[in-house]
Structure formats: structure tokens, C-alpha cells
Amino acid sequence: MMERALSIRNLKVSYKDREVLKGIDLDIYKNKITAIIGPSGCGKSTLLRCMNRMIDIVEGAKVSGEVFFGGENIYAPGVDPVKIRFKIGMVFQKPNPFPKSIFENVAFGLKINGYTGDIPQMVEKSLRWAGLWEEVKDRLKDDAYVLSGGQQQRLCIARALALEPEVLLLDEPCSALDPVSTLRIEELLLNLKERLTIVIVTHNIQQAARIADYTAFLLDGNLVEFGETSSMFTVPKDKRTEDFITGRFG
Amino acid sequence: MREKFIQILLASAASASVIIMIGIVFSLLGETAGFFKEVTIKEFLTETRWTPLFTPAHYGILPLVCGTALVTLIAVMVAAPVGLASALYLSEYAPDSLRRVVKPVLEILAGIPSIVYGYFALTFVTPIIRSVFPEANVFNALSAGIVMGIMLIPMVSSLSEDAMMSVPNSLREAAYALGATKLEVSCKVVLPAATSGIVASFILAISRAIGETMIVALAAGSTPKLTFNPLESIQTMTAFIVQVLLGDAPFGSIEYKSVYAVASVLFAMTLSLNIVGTLIVRRYREVY
Image (cartoon, rainbow over all chains, first blue to last red; front, side):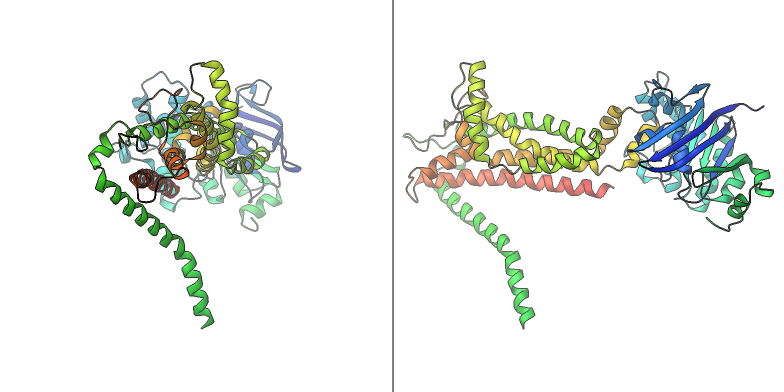
């Protein structure tokens, strides 16, 4: 039995009166890459945001059900979402560096969380993990916006890694990037899974096939199929999964 | 032919304000030049007494500038923190529904005539100040400054809130995802990203305070004095102009011309502040 990083049980989310997740049960395994695929509007980003309680800052979203992280339900009353997000990092669709220097971007999370270690050393480590160190080591004081889109996205990954999270959530991290930058990020994620668990929402079925150990297929707020990527992409159990991955819809 | 006529009509409407502005500047400068034929620029800028209506007359603008600066300083000390805090609340903490009500109300507040504020200063704030500090003059800089600050709060708040709202949500999300609390998101992400807009709102508020007339004419007094004691009666540049023009300074006399000299200084100060403020506003719009 493989160890689980996150266990999601009967998770339901609604915005006002519209139910976008209709009872999801899903296990995320440790040190694996899990891809969440599905057509636009199927609730995959919402599901991802439930995993570190980023859903809390969406006005009007109601969540029920449980998400277990390290044996603890992160939706139990009294759980501080700030502490959860500190351990479960997130990277967004569009690169969103702060309007600060490259160094300050990576150091931000360390500073606000009262990191007591050597900040410059941790910044260097994180940039190395993100494969960005060699490109930026001579211009750490430069504004983050001088970097290219792909570099900015790797900077955002470095910024999340600086907190040494146990899980890294990525919401379509390559959708705004060119193919070369996309490949670099995929390689990076494959290297990173040794040290943490990765969940990636992707619009790109090939991307899921290339990097994910497990894939979850979501449709209209329901989990249609979940399993090892290799078997799901060769012998899908559900007709709808087959239609989706062969490009018949979505 | 008809098209041409309409075009000329519209163009002249558009250029009217520019032409009038140029005319005002020329009339200001013309009378000011007349003033400086009788008073040296050196006396004007360095003499520490301003007594154009008495003999011996002294023409040092410093006491008036000092009065204006004192009232402006007090006003900004009231308007900046309160305006900023209210902007931060509206942009980061208040629910959408509340913001939609409060923001227009704030903007209406900015439209209250300043004579109302002046009256409020004299009849409401001054008695309170005098009950706390019995030595305070009936006309004092503190009362005028505080009320002017209250008048400026909606302006600071509304402009700063615009600057904060234009900070993209993706930056807030990035900070939340790194375990930032709401306060950290507000102070370490939104505030720095909105700095130039906030500074611009302060500068425009200062410019407005320098040019404000009714509150100081009513509540701050008419004693030009080189002091930084807020409890004393002072006179600002604008209040002096009102005083002379309401009296009967003969046309062409030196008292009459001194008004223009003071107005030129006032104009130069507010114009340069407005230019700086507008430049900053434009710069921050280009960032995102």
C-alpha cells in the first residue's frame, strides 16, 4: 500500500447555487505526480484549490467534505488555513511574480513565515531546485519582470519550493508558455517528485501522459476515472474517458 | 459647410479653457511684475513680516507660506492615515456589497462645499479644542487643519483605493499561497504595489489643501505669523487674498498688487504639485 499525501473524501463545492464539485473521493500518493484532466469548467481548478484551502479566498464558495493531510482534516474547525498553505504550495496558470527583485520574490515566503535559517542560502537552494540559478545568479537584484515568461514561472516554482512544502499544486502552469519552456518545466517536475508530491491540473492530455504517474479525469464535477496514467491512457475503463483522451470532445 | 462650422464650434469650446488659463497666468504675471517694481524679490522671499495693510508695510511672504504649510501639514496628518486605512479596508477587507455602497458615498462627501466645513470648524471643532487647550485662540491653525484633513479623507481614500484595486488579484493569490495572512497580503503586497498611486493621492491632497480657502478664512484667523504653534491664529496665502479683496484696496495700489504676488506663489506651488501628482499617477498606470 502506497503512502498517501492527501485523501479527499466526499468533497462538494458550490458557488452560490451552482454545484461545481459533486462529491469527490480521491487519493494523492506521496512522491508521485498526479494529473487532473478534464474539459473546461469541469471543476479541476476548484478541486486543486480545495487541497490547500485557497478556495477560502474565493468569495461565495461553499465547501463540504473532508481533505486529510498528514492524518488531519484540513477543513476541521480551528484549522488555520495559513499553516496549511505553508506546507502545501501552489503555482498558478499565469506567472505571477511580485513586483520586487528576483531575490525578494523567493525570500518573500521565508520572511513572512519567520524563517530563522540563512535566507540567501535558502534562496540559492530554491533557485537551484527550480533550475533557474545559473540563469539569474548574477542579477538577483533585478526586477522579476525582466525575466521571460518561462523563467518567471520557474521563479514562481522556486518561490513555492523555498518553504520546502510537502505538496506542490500546479494549476495549468504551462498554459501561458511556449513549447520549449513547457518542456523545461516538465523536466523540472519529474526531478522534483523525489522531494515532494506534485498535483498538476492540465488542459493538455499529452502533458499528463508525459509526466503523470496517476491521472484523474473529471467531468461536470464528478470524478469519472482515476488510476495509473499508463493503464488509463491505454485501456480506459470508462467510455467517456476514452472519448476525452482520444480527443472526441473537450 | 455645416460640418466645418460644427467642427470649429467644438474646437473653440475645447480650446476655451486652455486660452482662459493662459489669460489668467498672464494677468497674474503682469500684476506680479508691477508688485516687484516696488518691492524687491529679496525682501519678498526673506523678510519675516507680512504687513501690507499697515505702516510701516513689510512684504515678506514667509509668514503666509508658514501658515499655509502649518495648516496643510495638520490636514495631511489627519487625511493620510485615515484615508489610507479606509482605502485598505475598502479594497482588501470589505465585502463587495459594502464597497459598492460606501465608495459612491465617499465620493459624494468630497462634494460638500468647503464653506460648510469651515463653519463646522469654527462652531464645532474650535470649542472642543479650546476646552482641551484653554490657551488656544478662537481662530487657530489646528481647528482649520483638522477639518481640512476631514475634507480630504474621501479624496485620499478614493484615489488610494483605485490604486489598490488595480493591483492584480494574481499577486494576492500568490501571497496567500505562500502562507500570508490577510494583513501580510495587504501590507507587504498590495501597499508596495500601489505605492505610486497612494503617493499621488497624497500629493493631490496637499495641493488641494494649499489652495483651500474657505476653511482657513473662517477658522484659522488673519494674523500672518511665523509660527509652528497650531493653537495660534495664523493666516494662509489664500486667506490673505480673501481678506484684501473683500476690503477696499484701491485698484493699482501696492496692497492690491501684493495679492497677485501671493497668488502667483500659490499658483506655482499647486501647479507643480499637480504636475508631479499627475506624472506619478500616469507612471503607475503603466506598470500592469
